[in-house]
Image (cartoon, rainbow, N blue to C red; front, side, top):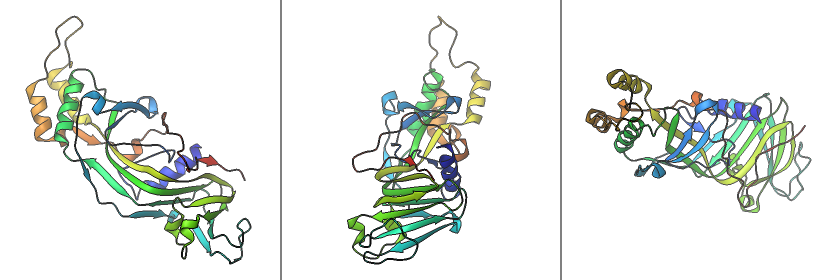
Length: 287
């Protein structure tokens, strides 16, 4: 599924600059989750609460929905119930749905509806506590913490495995109440047919995008220069955190924390949640 992941991640780079992408789409991400990025693999590493760090949250203001059609290299033809338009072969006459065709070899169709956002309400306590954990040897430089999460009530993702890929989508009864639009295909579909499609997924209640923070590399270099080793050698009493470190983190958390850019997201994830009830799991279709 590497090809599908690469296509999806590349497609989301511009519209969601600075955000990491949940992969597979069923990956559940929560505010305060901690991941280990060492070795080029994303591994679950608990959460901030489990490390004794509390935090408040505040809502963001994302757009209500998100659609991406690979800059026009994905075309969608809609079918009303009772009609028999040209090009459809798998939908029954009384089905409503859509025919999706890909003209690009790595084209992606991404649809998310009902978007909401949640993020840290104050990063000062996060910065000071992570600085304290780092000094105590309980926070590694390869760890990141989820600082913002975008959730969606429903979503659909299709990726082309080659040029000329296509799929027929049957919309659910709830989505057939009126004319079908592109965003109506978010989550409310079953795949009736697919040809040369890589990833095909549709489901509810996902967290497709998230941002993570880590200890700023320039801050780490300054701490090493100013204080040397974080702790004394084996057998010595633990050294208390220098007050200046905590004060700086509280006064200016941006000097201690930085967002990890999207191009530094490791390609793997070791803890993808299984598909929930009524949720189609990610699957690879064959030509």
